[in-house]
Image 1: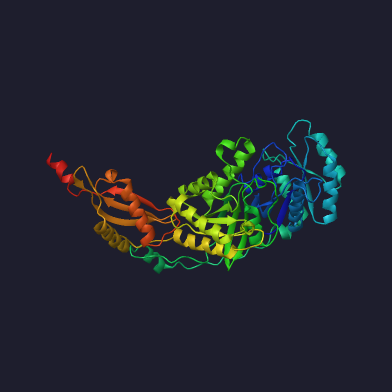
Image 2: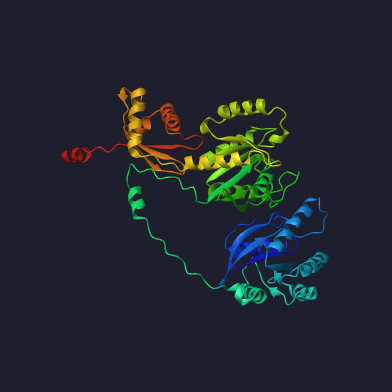
Amino acid sequence: MSFTVAIVGRPNVGKSTLFNRLVGKKLALVDDTPGVTRDRRPGDARLVDLKFRIIDTAGLEEAAPDTLEGRMRAQTEAAIEEADLSLFVVDAKTGLTPVDTALADMLRRKGKPVVLVANKSEARGSDGGFYDSFTLGLGEPTPISAEHGQGMLDLRDAIVAAIGEERAFPPKEDEAVTDVDVRAEAAAEDEDFEPEYDETKPLRVAIVGRPNAGKSTLINRFLGEDRLLTGPEAGITRDSISVEWDWKGRTIKMFDTAGMRRKAKVQEKLEKLSVADGLRAIRFAETVVIVFDSTIPFEKQDLQIVDLVLREGRAAVLAFNKWDLIDDPQAVLAELREKTDRLLPQARGIRAVPVSGQTGRGLDKLMQAVIDTDRTWNRRISTAKLNRWLDAVQTQHPPPAVSGRRLKLKYMTQVKARPPGFMISCTRPDALPESYVRYLTNGLRTDFNLPGVPIRIHFRAADNPFASKARKKR
């Protein structure tokens, strides 16, 4: 992107609504409650012919540095420092407040370009607030309606005037044309072909867990900076915030999510929106790290979150956080391993790593577990190997006879990866007992080294080549 823009202003003036309008998606949570946004959220914006990076920020308020509002203000000031231009949003409907005046003084002291935006200008009686905003000394305000999309052309012109034509429209670089690897495409059509794992492909990782498990602290330790808002208060994170960083030369896009409580306890509309945003992050991610509080692990909600992740078909890794608070690590680790195997039989072999977001212990081991799990999640097994395995397991433990007729498993192939999915052609698939399906699933997991990832097996009735001839005889 050619330049970066930060959206700033006091709470509830429509910053997140404007952010969603510019990125063209409902990424940021929007509610009538002031102070919904707490962390700074980046996005790729497009405004007519302008393309730029945009940052949504928390509402600026006067507060002590050690309070939650003070830490939110620090996050917003960091976004202003990072950006090349600030969109200072005021509410034309309610008019100016002393907080707006104080924020205008702060932006002037930063010495960076500022575009004054008078939002909610479509409302009746907004003219007074629009003309009052001239007194802020930041130039002529741009009247818009972020909710209805009015005034976007004027906003585009104001941004170009503030940032400059050269910065707004950098010269385009010629895109290099890459040759298509014909041999790789031909090999992919071969049933015996097993593609290698791509170590350079960017990886999407979601961090989920109960409130106050230390998810944001863990991500901050990965980044080496206070990128996400943290504190002793439970439920600080509301939006699913994505951050990018490199681990051993590989791009990692990590999503911080709001803490997930039991559904019966989630009553407020805002918390419901936060949980729904977290669920979208799980579906978008490839690998999901479920963060447990080591001091109170394996609560019922922890197990439900793991089960949710596996039902969504994601690759899962357990992180036992706050390990620095454990007095007897060896005994607790042995107990956690026993509970993991006993309480999570549907994810046998799931990787679990003790970590500490405060001290940074175990973070490299956690990332290596994420990479190894993603490698397993992307695994493809050749059809020849699968059919040799199917013959061997049937010889060792034949399918049971149902109603006096023996079931036959004839052919097996892998139909998809991410997660591994298999199709078995057999006689009477509806009659195959669930116990034998579990036998096949556990055998696949053990013999082909597929620990901790969901395995899907679909059964299909074998085609009868004589069925059409029998119909003709009738």
